[in-house]
Image (cartoon, rainbow, N blue to C red; front, side):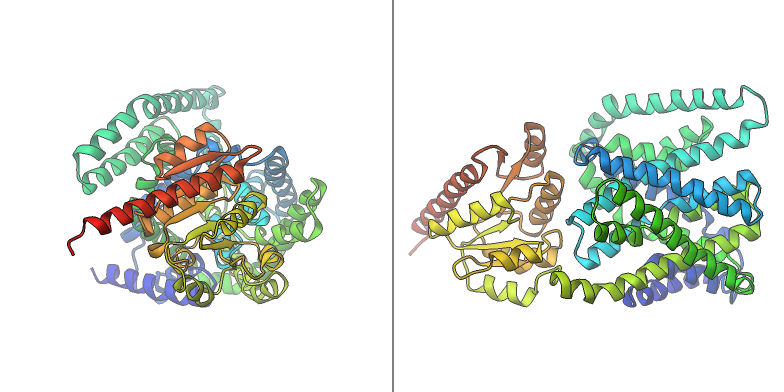
Length: 547
Protein backbone atom coordinates (compact mmCIF):
# COMPACT_ATOMS: atom_id res chain seq x y z
CA UNK A 1 0.00 0.00 0.00
CA UNK A 2 2.82 2.44 0.91
CA UNK A 3 4.56 1.75 -2.42
CA UNK A 4 1.30 2.46 -4.26
CA UNK A 5 1.00 5.81 -2.48
CA UNK A 6 4.59 6.69 -3.44
CA UNK A 7 3.82 5.83 -7.07
CA UNK A 8 0.72 8.05 -7.16
CA UNK A 9 2.41 10.95 -5.34
CA UNK A 10 5.40 10.81 -7.70
CA UNK A 11 3.02 10.59 -10.67
CA UNK A 12 1.25 13.82 -9.69
CA UNK A 13 4.33 15.79 -8.59
CA UNK A 14 6.60 14.95 -11.53
CA UNK A 15 3.84 15.21 -14.18
CA UNK A 16 2.84 18.66 -12.91
CA UNK A 17 6.44 19.85 -12.60
CA UNK A 18 7.54 18.74 -16.05
CA UNK A 19 4.36 20.03 -17.70
CA UNK A 20 4.91 23.38 -15.97
CA UNK A 21 8.36 23.73 -17.50
CA UNK A 22 6.98 22.40 -20.83
CA UNK A 23 9.16 19.28 -20.96
CA UNK A 24 6.12 17.03 -21.14
CA UNK A 25 4.68 14.53 -18.68
CA UNK A 26 6.24 11.54 -20.48
CA UNK A 27 9.78 12.65 -19.63
CA UNK A 28 8.64 13.60 -16.13
CA UNK A 29 7.11 10.21 -15.41
CA UNK A 30 10.20 8.43 -16.74
CA UNK A 31 12.33 10.47 -14.33
CA UNK A 32 9.81 9.86 -11.52
CA UNK A 33 10.14 6.10 -11.95
CA UNK A 34 13.94 6.30 -11.97
CA UNK A 35 13.96 8.46 -8.80
CA UNK A 36 11.57 6.38 -6.67
CA UNK A 37 12.52 2.98 -8.14
CA UNK A 38 14.97 0.38 -6.85
CA UNK A 39 17.92 2.04 -8.65
CA UNK A 40 17.05 5.47 -7.20
CA UNK A 41 15.87 6.24 -3.68
CA UNK A 42 14.15 2.83 -3.52
CA UNK A 43 10.78 4.10 -2.29
CA UNK A 44 9.47 1.33 -4.54
CA UNK A 45 11.63 -1.78 -4.36
CA UNK A 46 9.45 -4.21 -6.31
CA UNK A 47 8.70 -3.20 -9.90
CA UNK A 48 6.12 -5.98 -10.22
CA UNK A 49 3.82 -3.76 -8.11
CA UNK A 50 2.99 -1.80 -11.27
CA UNK A 51 3.97 -4.24 -14.05
CA UNK A 52 0.41 -5.42 -14.60
CA UNK A 53 -1.00 -1.89 -14.71
CA UNK A 54 1.83 -0.86 -17.05
CA UNK A 55 0.93 -3.66 -19.48
CA UNK A 56 -2.74 -2.66 -19.38
CA UNK A 57 -1.65 0.93 -20.05
CA UNK A 58 0.22 -0.05 -23.21
CA UNK A 59 -2.79 -2.03 -24.37
CA UNK A 60 -5.00 1.03 -23.95
CA UNK A 61 -2.44 3.27 -25.69
CA UNK A 62 -2.37 1.04 -28.77
CA UNK A 63 -6.16 0.63 -28.61
CA UNK A 64 -6.48 4.42 -28.69
CA UNK A 65 -4.11 4.64 -31.66
CA UNK A 66 -6.18 2.06 -33.53
CA UNK A 67 -9.29 4.03 -32.57
CA UNK A 68 -7.87 7.12 -34.28
CA UNK A 69 -6.95 5.31 -37.52
CA UNK A 70 -10.21 5.71 -39.40
CA UNK A 71 -9.82 4.88 -43.07
CA UNK A 72 -11.29 8.28 -43.94
CA UNK A 73 -8.30 9.98 -42.35
CA UNK A 74 -5.90 8.30 -44.76
CA UNK A 75 -7.78 9.75 -47.74
CA UNK A 76 -6.92 13.25 -46.56
CA UNK A 77 -3.25 12.99 -47.55
CA UNK A 78 -1.53 12.52 -50.89
CA UNK A 79 1.16 10.09 -52.03
CA UNK A 80 3.96 12.55 -51.19
CA UNK A 81 3.01 12.48 -47.52
CA UNK A 82 2.88 8.69 -47.33
CA UNK A 83 6.02 8.39 -49.42
CA UNK A 84 7.82 10.68 -46.98
CA UNK A 85 6.56 8.70 -43.97
CA UNK A 86 7.62 5.30 -45.34
CA UNK A 87 10.93 6.56 -46.75
CA UNK A 88 11.75 8.19 -43.41
CA UNK A 89 11.30 4.90 -41.54
CA UNK A 90 13.35 2.91 -44.04
CA UNK A 91 16.21 5.39 -44.52
CA UNK A 92 16.46 6.28 -40.82
CA UNK A 93 16.52 2.62 -39.81
CA UNK A 94 19.25 1.88 -42.35
CA UNK A 95 21.41 4.86 -41.35
CA UNK A 96 21.10 4.24 -37.61
CA UNK A 97 21.73 0.50 -38.07
CA UNK A 98 25.09 1.32 -39.69
CA UNK A 99 25.95 3.56 -36.74
CA UNK A 100 24.87 0.88 -34.24
CA UNK A 101 27.03 -1.73 -36.00
CA UNK A 102 30.05 0.56 -35.78
CA UNK A 103 29.37 0.99 -32.06
CA UNK A 104 29.72 -2.74 -31.55
CA UNK A 105 26.18 -4.16 -31.58
CA UNK A 106 25.56 -7.38 -33.47
CA UNK A 107 23.52 -7.09 -36.71
CA UNK A 108 20.17 -8.19 -35.20
CA UNK A 109 20.50 -5.89 -32.18
CA UNK A 110 21.60 -3.04 -34.47
CA UNK A 111 18.51 -3.37 -36.67
CA UNK A 112 16.19 -3.60 -33.65
CA UNK A 113 17.73 -0.55 -31.98
CA UNK A 114 17.76 1.44 -35.23
CA UNK A 115 14.15 0.53 -35.98
CA UNK A 116 13.07 1.51 -32.48
CA UNK A 117 14.80 4.89 -32.82
CA UNK A 118 13.23 5.57 -36.23
CA UNK A 119 9.86 6.26 -34.58
CA UNK A 120 8.97 9.68 -33.19
CA UNK A 121 6.95 10.50 -30.08
CA UNK A 122 3.28 10.83 -30.99
CA UNK A 123 2.39 12.13 -27.54
CA UNK A 124 5.17 14.73 -27.45
CA UNK A 125 4.70 15.98 -31.03
CA UNK A 126 0.92 16.37 -30.63
CA UNK A 127 1.48 18.24 -27.36
CA UNK A 128 4.03 20.57 -28.98
CA UNK A 129 1.73 21.26 -31.95
CA UNK A 130 -1.11 21.94 -29.53
CA UNK A 131 1.02 24.28 -27.39
CA UNK A 132 2.25 26.14 -30.46
CA UNK A 133 -1.27 26.30 -31.87
CA UNK A 134 -0.14 24.73 -35.14
CA UNK A 135 -2.11 21.48 -35.22
CA UNK A 136 -4.21 22.59 -38.20
CA UNK A 137 -1.36 24.17 -40.19
CA UNK A 138 0.31 22.45 -43.15
CA UNK A 139 3.21 21.47 -40.87
CA UNK A 140 0.82 20.08 -38.27
CA UNK A 141 -1.18 18.00 -40.75
CA UNK A 142 2.03 16.68 -42.33
CA UNK A 143 3.46 15.68 -38.95
CA UNK A 144 0.20 13.99 -37.91
CA UNK A 145 0.07 12.00 -41.16
CA UNK A 146 3.65 10.77 -40.67
CA UNK A 147 2.87 9.82 -37.08
CA UNK A 148 -0.15 7.81 -38.28
CA UNK A 149 2.10 5.78 -40.57
CA UNK A 150 4.61 5.36 -37.77
CA UNK A 151 1.88 4.08 -35.46
CA UNK A 152 1.09 1.36 -37.99
CA UNK A 153 4.82 0.70 -38.33
CA UNK A 154 5.06 0.07 -34.59
CA UNK A 155 2.52 -2.73 -34.93
CA UNK A 156 4.41 -4.29 -37.83
CA UNK A 157 7.70 -3.98 -35.92
CA UNK A 158 6.32 -5.70 -32.82
CA UNK A 159 4.93 -8.56 -34.91
CA UNK A 160 8.37 -8.90 -36.48
CA UNK A 161 9.97 -9.13 -33.04
CA UNK A 162 7.52 -11.87 -32.08
CA UNK A 163 8.38 -13.85 -35.23
CA UNK A 164 12.15 -13.54 -34.63
CA UNK A 165 11.75 -15.46 -31.39
CA UNK A 166 10.40 -18.47 -33.26
CA UNK A 167 12.74 -18.29 -36.25
CA UNK A 168 15.28 -20.70 -34.76
CA UNK A 169 12.76 -23.43 -33.97
CA UNK A 170 12.14 -24.64 -37.51
CA UNK A 171 11.96 -23.46 -41.10
CA UNK A 172 8.17 -23.55 -40.87
CA UNK A 173 8.00 -21.51 -37.66
CA UNK A 174 7.57 -18.08 -39.25
CA UNK A 175 5.08 -19.17 -41.99
CA UNK A 176 3.02 -21.00 -39.36
CA UNK A 177 3.09 -18.00 -37.06
CA UNK A 178 2.06 -15.64 -39.86
CA UNK A 179 -0.73 -18.05 -40.84
CA UNK A 180 -2.07 -18.17 -37.29
CA UNK A 181 -1.87 -14.39 -37.05
CA UNK A 182 -3.68 -14.01 -40.37
CA UNK A 183 -6.50 -16.28 -39.19
CA UNK A 184 -6.80 -14.44 -35.89
CA UNK A 185 -6.79 -11.04 -37.59
CA UNK A 186 -9.38 -12.21 -40.14
CA UNK A 187 -11.63 -13.43 -37.33
CA UNK A 188 -11.30 -10.11 -35.53
CA UNK A 189 -12.09 -8.17 -38.73
CA UNK A 190 -15.22 -10.26 -39.37
CA UNK A 191 -16.37 -9.83 -35.78
CA UNK A 192 -15.63 -6.11 -35.92
CA UNK A 193 -17.58 -5.61 -39.11
CA UNK A 194 -20.64 -7.79 -38.55
CA UNK A 195 -21.00 -8.46 -34.81
CA UNK A 196 -19.41 -5.64 -32.86
CA UNK A 197 -21.59 -2.69 -34.06
CA UNK A 198 -24.80 -4.51 -33.10
CA UNK A 199 -23.35 -5.52 -29.73
CA UNK A 200 -22.21 -2.00 -28.92
CA UNK A 201 -25.59 -0.61 -29.95
CA UNK A 202 -27.43 -2.98 -27.61
CA UNK A 203 -25.12 -2.21 -24.67
CA UNK A 204 -25.28 1.53 -25.37
CA UNK A 205 -29.08 1.59 -25.54
CA UNK A 206 -29.89 -0.78 -22.67
CA UNK A 207 -26.92 -0.53 -20.32
CA UNK A 208 -25.36 2.14 -18.15
CA UNK A 209 -22.15 4.02 -18.85
CA UNK A 210 -20.32 1.60 -16.54
CA UNK A 211 -21.66 -1.35 -18.53
CA UNK A 212 -20.53 0.22 -21.79
CA UNK A 213 -17.06 0.88 -20.39
CA UNK A 214 -16.82 -2.70 -19.10
CA UNK A 215 -17.77 -3.95 -22.57
CA UNK A 216 -14.95 -1.94 -24.11
CA UNK A 217 -12.51 -3.38 -21.56
CA UNK A 218 -13.67 -6.92 -22.39
CA UNK A 219 -13.19 -6.17 -26.11
CA UNK A 220 -9.61 -4.95 -25.60
CA UNK A 221 -8.64 -7.88 -23.37
CA UNK A 222 -10.31 -10.49 -25.60
CA UNK A 223 -8.59 -9.21 -28.75
CA UNK A 224 -5.25 -9.02 -26.92
CA UNK A 225 -5.53 -12.57 -25.58
CA UNK A 226 -6.61 -13.87 -29.00
CA UNK A 227 -3.54 -12.38 -30.70
CA UNK A 228 -1.25 -13.59 -27.95
CA UNK A 229 -2.50 -17.16 -28.36
CA UNK A 230 -2.06 -16.83 -32.14
CA UNK A 231 1.63 -16.01 -31.66
CA UNK A 232 1.35 -12.23 -31.70
CA UNK A 233 1.41 -9.82 -28.79
CA UNK A 234 -1.23 -8.37 -26.50
CA UNK A 235 -0.27 -4.89 -27.73
CA UNK A 236 -1.10 -5.75 -31.35
CA UNK A 237 -4.38 -7.32 -30.25
CA UNK A 238 -5.33 -4.09 -28.51
CA UNK A 239 -4.33 -2.12 -31.62
CA UNK A 240 -6.60 -4.30 -33.79
CA UNK A 241 -9.43 -3.88 -31.29
CA UNK A 242 -9.12 -0.13 -31.79
CA UNK A 243 -9.27 -0.56 -35.56
CA UNK A 244 -12.42 -2.68 -35.12
CA UNK A 245 -14.17 0.16 -33.29
CA UNK A 246 -12.75 3.02 -35.39
CA UNK A 247 -15.43 2.91 -38.07
CA UNK A 248 -18.39 2.46 -35.72
CA UNK A 249 -20.64 5.25 -34.50
CA UNK A 250 -19.32 4.76 -30.96
CA UNK A 251 -15.70 5.73 -31.64
CA UNK A 252 -15.90 9.17 -30.04
CA UNK A 253 -17.91 7.99 -27.04
CA UNK A 254 -15.37 5.23 -26.35
CA UNK A 255 -12.42 7.60 -26.78
CA UNK A 256 -13.94 10.02 -24.27
CA UNK A 257 -14.79 7.26 -21.78
CA UNK A 258 -11.35 5.64 -21.71
CA UNK A 259 -9.24 8.81 -21.93
CA UNK A 260 -8.72 9.31 -18.15
CA UNK A 261 -7.89 5.63 -17.53
CA UNK A 262 -5.63 5.43 -20.56
CA UNK A 263 -3.62 8.49 -19.55
CA UNK A 264 -3.16 7.21 -16.01
CA UNK A 265 -2.21 3.67 -17.05
CA UNK A 266 0.11 4.81 -19.85
CA UNK A 267 1.77 7.15 -17.37
CA UNK A 268 2.35 4.22 -15.04
CA UNK A 269 4.00 2.34 -17.92
CA UNK A 270 6.53 5.17 -18.36
CA UNK A 271 7.15 5.12 -14.61
CA UNK A 272 7.78 1.36 -14.85
CA UNK A 273 10.33 1.95 -17.62
CA UNK A 274 12.01 4.56 -15.43
CA UNK A 275 12.10 2.16 -12.48
CA UNK A 276 13.96 -0.36 -14.60
CA UNK A 277 16.53 2.27 -15.58
CA UNK A 278 19.67 2.69 -13.54
CA UNK A 279 20.43 6.40 -13.56
CA UNK A 280 23.78 5.80 -11.83
CA UNK A 281 24.78 3.51 -14.68
CA UNK A 282 23.51 6.07 -17.16
CA UNK A 283 25.46 8.75 -15.30
CA UNK A 284 28.62 6.71 -15.67
CA UNK A 285 27.91 6.72 -19.42
CA UNK A 286 26.78 10.36 -19.52
CA UNK A 287 28.87 11.23 -22.57
CA UNK A 288 27.38 8.28 -24.48
CA UNK A 289 23.87 9.33 -23.45
CA UNK A 290 24.42 12.93 -24.55
CA UNK A 291 26.03 11.85 -27.83
CA UNK A 292 23.21 9.41 -28.65
CA UNK A 293 20.46 11.94 -27.80
CA UNK A 294 22.03 14.81 -29.77
CA UNK A 295 23.12 12.53 -32.61
CA UNK A 296 19.64 11.06 -32.90
CA UNK A 297 18.04 14.48 -33.26
CA UNK A 298 20.64 15.68 -35.77
CA UNK A 299 20.82 12.54 -37.93
CA UNK A 300 17.15 11.73 -37.89
CA UNK A 301 16.13 15.37 -38.30
CA UNK A 302 18.52 15.81 -41.25
CA UNK A 303 17.14 12.68 -42.96
CA UNK A 304 13.53 13.83 -42.54
CA UNK A 305 14.34 17.36 -43.74
CA UNK A 306 16.27 16.08 -46.78
CA UNK A 307 13.47 13.68 -47.75
CA UNK A 308 10.86 16.41 -47.29
CA UNK A 309 12.75 18.79 -49.58
CA UNK A 310 13.27 16.02 -52.12
CA UNK A 311 9.50 15.58 -52.23
CA UNK A 312 8.89 19.27 -52.87
CA UNK A 313 8.38 20.79 -49.42
CA UNK A 314 9.97 24.22 -48.83
CA UNK A 315 13.19 24.47 -46.81
CA UNK A 316 11.68 26.04 -43.70
CA UNK A 317 8.88 23.49 -43.41
CA UNK A 318 11.32 20.63 -44.00
CA UNK A 319 13.64 21.88 -41.25
CA UNK A 320 10.75 22.40 -38.83
CA UNK A 321 9.46 18.91 -39.58
CA UNK A 322 12.92 17.38 -39.07
CA UNK A 323 13.33 19.07 -35.71
CA UNK A 324 9.79 18.22 -34.61
CA UNK A 325 10.19 14.50 -35.40
CA UNK A 326 13.87 14.11 -34.54
CA UNK A 327 13.43 12.72 -31.02
CA UNK A 328 12.90 9.14 -29.93
CA UNK A 329 9.49 7.72 -29.15
CA UNK A 330 7.52 6.31 -26.25
CA UNK A 331 7.32 3.21 -28.45
CA UNK A 332 11.10 2.94 -28.31
CA UNK A 333 10.70 2.03 -24.64
CA UNK A 334 8.18 -0.68 -25.54
CA UNK A 335 10.30 -2.17 -28.32
CA UNK A 336 13.50 -2.13 -26.24
CA UNK A 337 11.69 -3.73 -23.28
CA UNK A 338 10.45 -6.57 -25.50
CA UNK A 339 13.87 -6.95 -27.15
CA UNK A 340 15.67 -7.20 -23.79
CA UNK A 341 13.20 -9.77 -22.45
CA UNK A 342 13.73 -11.86 -25.60
CA UNK A 343 17.51 -11.58 -25.28
CA UNK A 344 18.03 -9.64 -28.52
CA UNK A 345 19.48 -6.45 -26.95
CA UNK A 346 21.98 -6.33 -24.03
CA UNK A 347 20.55 -4.79 -20.80
CA UNK A 348 23.34 -2.19 -20.58
CA UNK A 349 22.69 -0.99 -24.12
CA UNK A 350 18.95 -0.88 -23.39
CA UNK A 351 19.53 1.15 -20.22
CA UNK A 352 21.67 3.75 -21.99
CA UNK A 353 19.27 3.82 -24.93
CA UNK A 354 16.20 4.43 -22.73
CA UNK A 355 17.84 7.37 -20.97
CA UNK A 356 19.05 8.75 -24.31
CA UNK A 357 15.53 8.64 -25.75
CA UNK A 358 14.15 10.44 -22.69
CA UNK A 359 16.87 13.10 -23.04
CA UNK A 360 16.12 13.52 -26.78
CA UNK A 361 12.44 14.08 -26.01
CA UNK A 362 13.34 16.62 -23.33
CA UNK A 363 15.69 18.44 -25.74
CA UNK A 364 13.01 18.74 -28.44
CA UNK A 365 10.50 19.98 -25.84
CA UNK A 366 13.03 22.62 -24.67
CA UNK A 367 13.75 23.71 -28.25
CA UNK A 368 10.00 24.01 -28.93
CA UNK A 369 9.61 26.16 -25.82
CA UNK A 370 12.39 28.45 -27.00
CA UNK A 371 10.95 28.55 -30.53
CA UNK A 372 7.45 29.51 -29.43
CA UNK A 373 8.02 33.28 -28.91
CA UNK A 374 10.13 33.41 -32.08
CA UNK A 375 7.36 31.79 -34.14
CA UNK A 376 4.77 34.07 -32.58
CA UNK A 377 6.81 37.12 -33.58
CA UNK A 378 7.17 35.83 -37.13
CA UNK A 379 3.66 34.44 -37.66
CA UNK A 380 1.64 36.10 -34.91
CA UNK A 381 0.07 34.42 -31.89
CA UNK A 382 -1.19 30.99 -32.86
CA UNK A 383 -4.17 31.24 -30.56
CA UNK A 384 -6.36 34.26 -30.22
CA UNK A 385 -6.10 36.68 -27.40
CA UNK A 386 -9.01 35.30 -25.42
CA UNK A 387 -9.57 38.72 -23.85
CA UNK A 388 -9.89 40.24 -27.32
CA UNK A 389 -12.27 37.53 -28.50
CA UNK A 390 -14.28 37.62 -25.29
CA UNK A 391 -14.56 41.40 -25.48
CA UNK A 392 -15.83 41.25 -29.08
CA UNK A 393 -18.30 38.45 -28.27
CA UNK A 394 -19.63 40.30 -25.21
CA UNK A 395 -20.92 43.04 -27.50
CA UNK A 396 -22.80 40.56 -29.68
CA UNK A 397 -26.00 38.61 -29.21
CA UNK A 398 -27.71 36.22 -31.62
CA UNK A 399 -24.56 36.35 -33.71
CA UNK A 400 -23.14 33.86 -36.23
CA UNK A 401 -19.73 32.34 -35.46
CA UNK A 402 -17.83 31.57 -38.69
CA UNK A 403 -14.85 29.22 -38.30
CA UNK A 404 -12.34 29.12 -41.16
CA UNK A 405 -11.63 32.01 -43.52
CA UNK A 406 -10.31 30.36 -46.61
CA UNK A 407 -11.80 31.31 -49.96
CA UNK A 408 -15.22 29.88 -49.08
CA UNK A 409 -15.26 31.08 -45.47
CA UNK A 410 -14.29 34.60 -46.49
CA UNK A 411 -16.94 34.80 -49.21
CA UNK A 412 -19.50 33.49 -46.71
CA UNK A 413 -18.49 36.02 -44.04
CA UNK A 414 -18.71 38.92 -46.50
CA UNK A 415 -22.12 37.77 -47.69
CA UNK A 416 -23.47 37.54 -44.13
CA UNK A 417 -22.08 41.01 -43.34
CA UNK A 418 -23.82 42.39 -46.44
CA UNK A 419 -27.08 40.92 -45.10
CA UNK A 420 -26.53 42.88 -41.84
CA UNK A 421 -26.18 39.71 -39.77
CA UNK A 422 -23.90 40.01 -36.72
CA UNK A 423 -20.90 37.72 -37.19
CA UNK A 424 -17.68 36.82 -35.43
CA UNK A 425 -15.11 35.07 -37.64
CA UNK A 426 -12.18 32.97 -36.38
CA UNK A 427 -9.22 31.59 -38.32
CA UNK A 428 -5.99 29.87 -37.24
CA UNK A 429 -3.77 31.64 -39.81
CA UNK A 430 -2.23 34.79 -38.35
CA UNK A 431 -1.09 36.00 -41.78
CA UNK A 432 -4.58 35.54 -43.24
CA UNK A 433 -6.25 37.38 -40.37
CA UNK A 434 -3.80 40.29 -40.65
CA UNK A 435 -4.63 40.53 -44.35
CA UNK A 436 -8.40 40.34 -43.90
CA UNK A 437 -8.87 42.43 -40.79
CA UNK A 438 -10.61 45.70 -41.59
CA UNK A 439 -13.57 47.72 -40.29
CA UNK A 440 -16.83 45.87 -40.79
CA UNK A 441 -15.24 42.43 -40.95
CA UNK A 442 -14.71 41.17 -37.38
CA UNK A 443 -11.93 38.61 -37.84
CA UNK A 444 -9.82 37.18 -35.00
CA UNK A 445 -7.01 34.71 -34.42
CA UNK A 446 -8.21 31.45 -33.00
CA UNK A 447 -7.49 27.74 -33.09
CA UNK A 448 -11.04 26.39 -32.97
CA UNK A 449 -9.75 22.99 -31.87
CA UNK A 450 -9.21 24.57 -28.45
CA UNK A 451 -12.31 24.71 -26.29
CA UNK A 452 -11.20 27.92 -24.53
CA UNK A 453 -11.12 29.72 -27.90
CA UNK A 454 -14.63 28.52 -28.78
CA UNK A 455 -15.90 29.52 -25.35
CA UNK A 456 -14.49 33.00 -25.93
CA UNK A 457 -16.59 33.27 -29.11
CA UNK A 458 -19.74 33.48 -27.01
CA UNK A 459 -21.32 30.19 -28.08
CA UNK A 460 -23.99 30.55 -25.40
CA UNK A 461 -25.28 33.75 -27.03
CA UNK A 462 -24.71 32.66 -30.65
CA UNK A 463 -27.63 31.77 -32.86
CA UNK A 464 -25.59 29.71 -35.33
CA UNK A 465 -22.09 28.29 -35.80
CA UNK A 466 -20.74 27.71 -39.32
CA UNK A 467 -17.66 25.50 -39.70
CA UNK A 468 -16.15 26.39 -43.10
CA UNK A 469 -12.72 24.75 -42.78
CA UNK A 470 -11.81 22.61 -45.84
CA UNK A 471 -10.51 19.62 -43.82
CA UNK A 472 -13.56 17.50 -42.96
CA UNK A 473 -11.74 15.60 -40.22
CA UNK A 474 -10.84 18.90 -38.51
CA UNK A 475 -14.40 20.13 -39.06
CA UNK A 476 -15.81 17.05 -37.33
CA UNK A 477 -13.49 17.50 -34.36
CA UNK A 478 -14.53 21.16 -34.04
CA UNK A 479 -18.17 20.10 -34.32
CA UNK A 480 -17.76 17.62 -31.47
CA UNK A 481 -16.20 20.30 -29.24
CA UNK A 482 -19.03 22.75 -30.05
CA UNK A 483 -21.64 20.08 -29.31
CA UNK A 484 -19.99 19.34 -25.98
CA UNK A 485 -19.70 23.01 -24.99
CA UNK A 486 -23.09 24.18 -26.23
CA UNK A 487 -25.41 21.32 -27.30
CA UNK A 488 -28.31 23.57 -28.30
CA UNK A 489 -26.61 25.90 -30.77
CA UNK A 490 -27.23 24.79 -34.41
CA UNK A 491 -24.09 24.05 -36.45
CA UNK A 492 -23.72 24.23 -40.22
CA UNK A 493 -20.74 22.47 -41.82
CA UNK A 494 -19.24 22.07 -45.28
CA UNK A 495 -18.18 18.63 -46.54
CA UNK A 496 -16.49 17.15 -49.60
CA UNK A 497 -18.84 14.25 -50.33
CA UNK A 498 -22.03 12.50 -49.21
CA UNK A 499 -20.27 10.01 -46.94
CA UNK A 500 -18.58 12.79 -45.01
CA UNK A 501 -21.89 14.66 -44.87
CA UNK A 502 -23.60 11.64 -43.29
CA UNK A 503 -20.83 11.38 -40.68
CA UNK A 504 -21.19 15.07 -39.81
CA UNK A 505 -24.96 14.79 -39.47
CA UNK A 506 -24.50 11.81 -37.14
CA UNK A 507 -22.00 13.89 -35.14
CA UNK A 508 -24.66 16.54 -34.56
CA UNK A 509 -24.58 19.03 -37.46
CA UNK A 510 -27.90 20.76 -38.17
CA UNK A 511 -27.03 20.96 -41.83
CA UNK A 512 -24.23 20.09 -44.26
CA UNK A 513 -23.38 21.72 -47.60
CA UNK A 514 -21.33 19.78 -50.14
CA UNK A 515 -18.37 21.53 -51.78
CA UNK A 516 -19.07 22.81 -55.28
CA UNK A 517 -19.05 25.92 -57.42
CA UNK A 518 -21.55 27.73 -55.17
CA UNK A 519 -20.54 26.43 -51.74
CA UNK A 520 -20.27 29.86 -50.10
CA UNK A 521 -23.65 30.96 -51.46
CA UNK A 522 -25.27 27.66 -50.44
CA UNK A 523 -23.85 28.01 -46.93
CA UNK A 524 -25.13 31.59 -46.71
CA UNK A 525 -28.63 30.58 -47.85
CA UNK A 526 -28.81 27.73 -45.34
CA UNK A 527 -27.46 30.03 -42.65
CA UNK A 528 -30.16 32.62 -43.29
CA UNK A 529 -32.87 29.94 -43.18
CA UNK A 530 -31.63 28.57 -39.86
CA UNK A 531 -31.09 32.08 -38.46
CA UNK A 532 -34.60 33.26 -39.43
CA UNK A 533 -36.17 30.01 -38.17
CA UNK A 534 -34.55 30.60 -34.77
CA UNK A 535 -35.82 34.20 -34.83
CA UNK A 536 -39.40 33.05 -35.53
CA UNK A 537 -39.32 30.34 -32.85
CA UNK A 538 -37.94 32.84 -30.33
CA UNK A 539 -40.72 35.31 -31.12
CA UNK A 540 -43.37 32.60 -30.82
CA UNK A 541 -41.96 31.56 -27.45
CA UNK A 542 -42.12 35.18 -26.27
CA UNK A 543 -45.75 35.52 -27.45
CA UNK A 544 -46.69 32.31 -25.65
CA UNK A 545 -45.15 33.38 -22.33
CA UNK A 546 -47.53 34.85 -19.71
CA UNK A 547 -47.65 38.64 -19.47
